[in-house]
Length: 166
Image 1 (cartoon, helix red, strand yellow):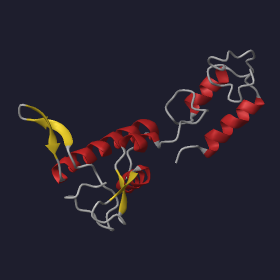
Image 2: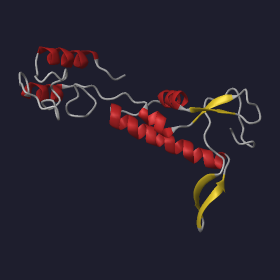
Image 3: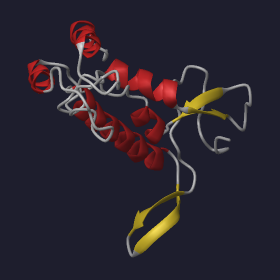
Image 4: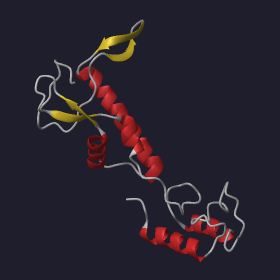
């Protein structure tokens, strides 16, 4: 439930925590911090963490619209205590960051982009057989059949041409 003193409305997209927030205070820690003054730093921190994840995973920051959409879609539903018919998403940092798609299988250099560097790594293993199941020929055995063959090449080229990230 949303704290009884919090403002909610149908036109809001998202809610941030604001009741009994655990934070530093002069002389120690306190759990009696609340309201907008508590919610704003929580929300800003979640956005900062999301933007860092976006940069590391996709190579660029999210637009404001992408940030809003991600936070709304991944938020946990919470009802307004004063008006239970108002249910809005509550910020959920872990769900927002976990919502990123995994890197493509053909991304052999772990930069979440299938490019010439990945092709170079793939080519080094071309027609290799007896791939060890611990690394599948450096990841080039995409079909996991023990050899780097035309099936792997077809998968690699498809991911390279079509892309698997937005």
